[in-house]
Image (cartoon, rainbow, N blue to C red):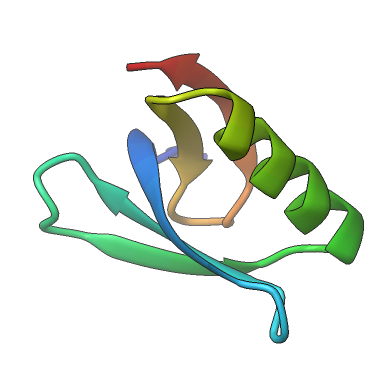
Length: 70
């Protein structure tokens, strides 16, 4: 199975719909993924406490692989 895992920036979080918008650093590809409310809360706290966090996202499955400081 080929994986399309890319390092992305979180550009928007919609708490009401639980959707997170990710995009490549160059802005050419955007991915929106629905997550649990627990993950959304964790992500918001994480982003508040750290500047420059990027997320590894598999664009085929929507799976979040991890994160990296950028």
